[in-house]
Length: 406
Image 1 (tube, one colour):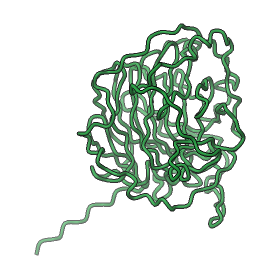
Image 2 (image 1 turned 90 degrees about the vertical axis):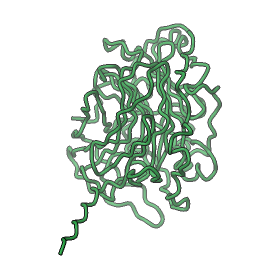
Image 3 (image 1 turned 30 degrees about the horizontal axis):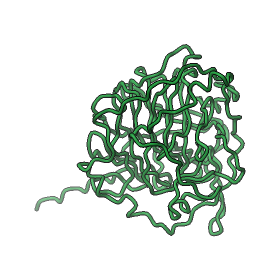
Image 4 (image 1 turned 60 degrees about the vertical axis):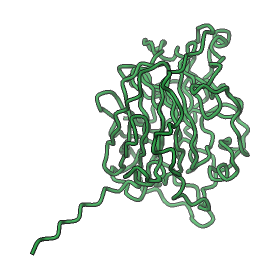
């Protein structure tokens, strides 16, 4: 039972960080960007997207905020506050291109920007928020349902569409989690991939639709996640936003906080991302911390001490997963909540969302096992490193009966 998980971790979680500066991890020789042999390279995933479609205006997020956590020992924290000299994909870090504070995801795309602050408050630190989060584990086990005391807020109204009344009931509604996933048991120092950032439709009674990477320990009890999410509980609007998350001993923490340490001065978890674009997301272990990369920057890190304080050690992956996830009030959110960009991933040349050219740092050859947890969101395998995913949440049509012979 979720019950907002306020008791799991204190808002001001103290982080004692130890370590010393070391040497950056060496890239896996097989790691690369979207390979020319990948069918995805020649496909325009935005072909079915209407760039003139209206977007919801930004609004302040509901009152589920937590105070950002800060390291308790600043002297020790300095030992790990310097990221690897190169991003996981081998490039030198550069500042992402940011638009005006409060800009919508569509405005960012049309203006050629990568991201923008979610509001105009001028805040430079991410704010942790509790909300439902799904989880996939070893052995094809995954979180299917849970109850929560959080009720999704209605979308902000627009000039042409007043705010609808949420169809969810108060009390303890059930959250249904659905996934399209690629996974592999892989010991590595990190992972990165090309991720298509979409703006899926999210019903007023549903919780989120997202795309992410999850790097886990071998027993899958410890997890670091990064991706984009459409989640009005966490972000207050219907645009895609950058998020980070982590699990300790199978216990969920919170979005964008609970020990996450901000590093970048231009982009932070919770910021709005340009929709209908493809960006690199990465996770890399370096000098006592799991660092998060987005596009051209290091965003920040989760200190390894978060897990050490809980009696475990987590400094190398044992399982890597890349997936789309929907959290809905019903297991069949047909035409209500979309995964990816809402286009069913039914064929190779579909303009649906994708995860492409998944790569490891100092890990094995990528050979993902790809599948879906539900037929309402199909998945199409492009290669051992790339797949298309998502759809509109509707069951596949029944096959037409064969004509009877006369």
